Amino acid sequence: MAKGKIYILGLVAGIACLLSACSGKKQTGPERPAFSADSAYSYIEQQMAFGPRVPNSSAHSACAVWLIQQLRAFGAEVELQKGEMPDYSGRNQQIYNIIGHFYTVETMNRPRILLGAHYDTRPWCDEEEEYTDRYYNVPGANDGASGVGVLLEVARQVGQRLNDSALATPVDIIFFDCEDMGTPQFYTGTERENTWCLGSQLWATNYSRQKQGAKYKFGVVLDMVGAPDAVFPKEMYSSQYAENYQQQIWHAAEQLGYGARFSNQQAYPIVDDHYYVNVLAGIPCVDIIHYEIRNATGFPHWWHTREDDLTNISKPTLQAVGEVVMSQL
Image (tube, rainbow, N blue to C red; front, top):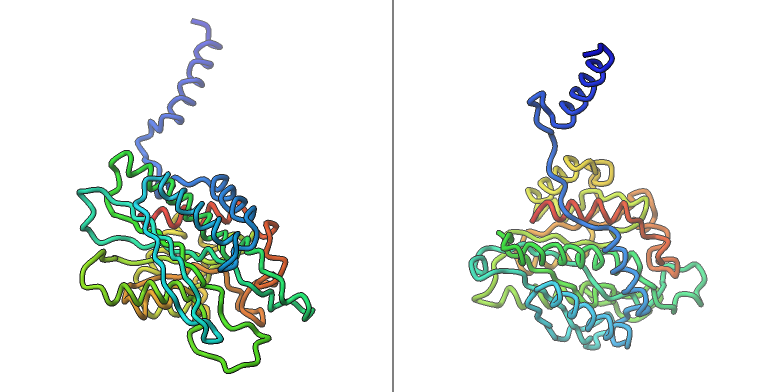
């Protein structure tokens, strides 16, 4: 055989050896969870197509119906929790929490993982500089739709596991209502306490009163999880009530290569849906939320303004958050 042919054959064999990892060394690092940012983004677009999902509006109702349909299509048993909670002015606000239960006959009595995001949008852009602009509805691409979009894609993936009989831990996904109905800045009346997160207050209060029902290992709430420059520091209430799970999630993010996004910097306590899940329901719950420590408000410049649109949504960010959440299931 000619020397040239021997060389070529040796080169081919060497490449094949590398491709098949014939050195005996195993590939390191965690298996990357299944998640599609394209799918999550499309769910955000569909929410935005309804318009601002302000409670008591037709867009809010249409979106709620759509969310129920999506969860059912993914194989969830869907529960619509209806109730009332007083708003900032003391008037009762109608609340519609949407809950998707994913379980099998074999796993239905096991402790579950709770995932949540709010689907309503704020009725007022009260962070706008111009006073006359403060009465517009917030579009809610990031503050609302991003968390829901990620969880809908998670629901699709969990539904696939359900179909494959591969769902070892049951999962409940809650789309909380009326998270963003807190006291507007321009309100001049007597301010009440606990005017934010009305849907999670309702759910957590009812959960704490029930004597039988689902038990939860821990929970994760997503809020404003789509911005290109999003960084998620360790929120203080999460550290206080669910430190072990917060550490577990942030470690998983680092292992997946998202350590720069999931910062170890401590953030101030934030009253978000997770707060009431922790305090009222007694379920350790972690908040993954975009927080900017150096800003006056603590939040991005588009927060509670008319600029909260699809320009604030990045597929790489959605992918990072989705993979981290999926790594916990």
